[in-house]
Length: 136
Image (cartoon, rainbow, N blue to C red; front, side):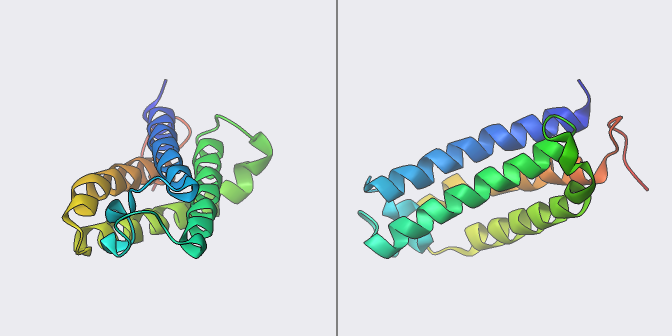
């Protein structure tokens, strides 16, 4: 298996963990101190629970783009995934920045490294060819 595919699988596994966290927040698990800068330390209010579900859906969609770009699923997405993967990389970059500057120490400790791994793995998928070599 080449670097691109390994990176896509890593991205997907990490994303699924984040999706599970978002679904837990939406279900009312009191982990709010680890999200949204810790502004809601217990259960999320209803509007943020809906937001957590939207975030979970976006993460699933981004994982599908990364997997498609790596040639692991949805071959019909091959062409569109060439540019959609850059949205994923941009999202991961923004996520890393926000998780580095959050006032919540718990959020920084958990999600900054997670966002870093998502950025690196999506970047590898974006920058490498199907053979796993860097593109020019």
